[in-house]
Length: 270
Image (cartoon, rainbow, N blue to C red; front, side, top):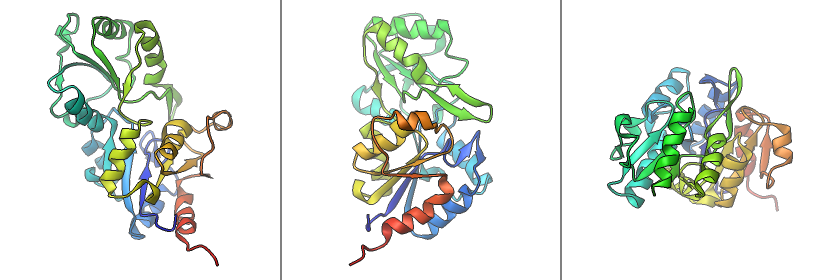
């Protein structure tokens, strides 16, 4: 790891909780920047656009711009353009992400009851994920629509505690329709490939920092990236213990990352 050149960073639960900075996170990211490392904020967040996320983070003091951020919706738009060009998509998502879905044809809600959709796209869960909407998505898939999900996270942490996310609904939809969703965000290998291309680094030159041991850390390690698990956000000791693998590194919080990176970049002792 003496050649580490870039850091991929999850946002929610790592840098912030409910968009409020975690202790020491702003200073740590500034230190990472000052060290000359490439930075990409990689997030499955589907409630805000890249520009909106950048604005909130910059206002909190983080040295970031929209160009530093790679979101699941932006990667999904590229995926749909490549694999389903011209498809009519039924989108179920909590939040306005139209800006990051450039080029995607979204079926208007007043057409959602007919067979107009070629692809069902699930974003982040929220109040919109009610029975009628999920049953409508089920109907589209039964009629032959492809099922694409931006992620399969089961929950995320807010200032009110853990909240259900898309994965809790997606599992049922997959079983009912007897299909497996195509995942575009983390933990898909394609997402990490896009992030590495974004920072211009090879897998062996990058570190991924996240609070989700499966989707962030172990998925990155399968892609050849060094994984760092933080004990903030959605981290739970029991989830860590029951995980399908072992993180390369575990730190208490993002504030501890600069010290870890310095250690990883230190030339080996003779």
